[in-house]
Length: 191
Ligand code: ADP
Ligand code: 5GP
Image 1 (tube, rainbow, N blue to C red):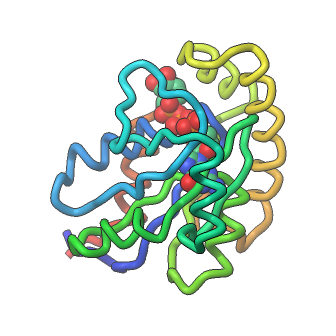
Image 2: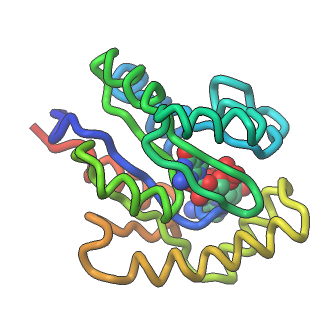
């Protein structure tokens, strides 16, 4: 298999749609090809999440100071917390020669589109809002308030993704294996 493009790949989609599941599968299958852009966030770690691996878990002051210092490519408020991609997060991956994968929300997508990162944009959609709610609640990580905020954001994200041209590809994550195959096809090209 051959890499089509060395530019970063931005993966976006509603919370609970399966982005992490798909990305983790990609990283496990191709350990030398991809690097994850480790974002900063003010939200608390979930069980199993590690600081400096899944996210840099920081306080609001730290992100705001970083933004003021010009250290961030983009940042956004999502579901009551701040999230942001530092320049270093992307550079650290690019230095290794691996393809940088970003998992960011719709606001981040809009910001990255305005940069010269030359990224490709992939949207992971749930089969339905009902399925999304089931997955989000089934994951067991959110309070009721957080679940509601995430589901409200999902409606906007789906509307944005429905506009042709906003994403290079929309993958409906219904059957996981099928969605994964589409993800690989988007990123790799058969030799
Ligand atoms: P995201 O990273 O987009 O917030 P996750 O990867 O954490 O979403 O997935 C949310 C939940 O949905 C997890 O419990 C995951 O196991 C489950 N899930 C992911 N993909 C599928 C799928 N195709 N069918 C059913 N459940 C799925
Ligand atoms: P979660 O709290 O479920 O890990 O992520 C919530 C949302 O924040 C998801 O849509 C995820 O893609 C997004 N997100 C994660 N990191 C960043 C980031 O650095 N910037 C932006 N804009 N969104 C992010």
